[in-house]
Image (cartoon, rainbow, N blue to C red; front, side, top):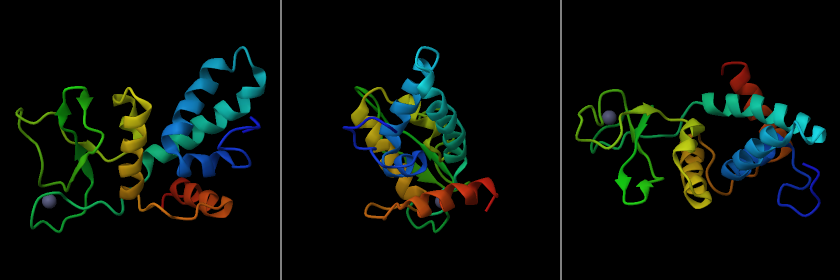
Length: 160
Ligand SMILES: [Zn+2]
C-alpha cells in the first residue's frame, strides 16, 4: 500500500478490502500477477490472498430472503441475466426459496464476494461488492477503522 497518490494510501490491506472490495480485488490480482517481476509486491500479494480467502467465507448475517412474506435469513443468491451479462444485483434466498428450476438465469449459490469474477467491468464489480457488503452487515457509512477491520477478519478466522 505504498503508492503515494492512491485512495488506499495509509490504509491496511484489511481496511482497503472492507472499504473498497472491488478495487482491492483488482489491486490484489494485479499484485499476484506482477510479484514475480516486482518482489516488493510479494507481501501485498500474500496478504491479499489470505484475507481474500477469509472475506469469501464471511457469513451473510444481514441478508434477507427475497421471497415475499418469507422472514428467512438469506444464505444463497442467484443472478438475473441482462444483455451485457449478469446483473450485479443478486437476489438473496433462504434455503427453501429461489430458483431451483432451469428457467432461472443462474442456480443458487452461497452469498459470497467470491463470485465477483463473474463481472467484467469495474463498475459492475463495484456494484456487486456493494450488495455483498450490505449482506455481510457492513452498510454504507460504516467507519472502517484499522481496529474494526482487524477485528472483523479475526472473527472470521476464529469461526465466529
Ligand atoms: Zn425464503
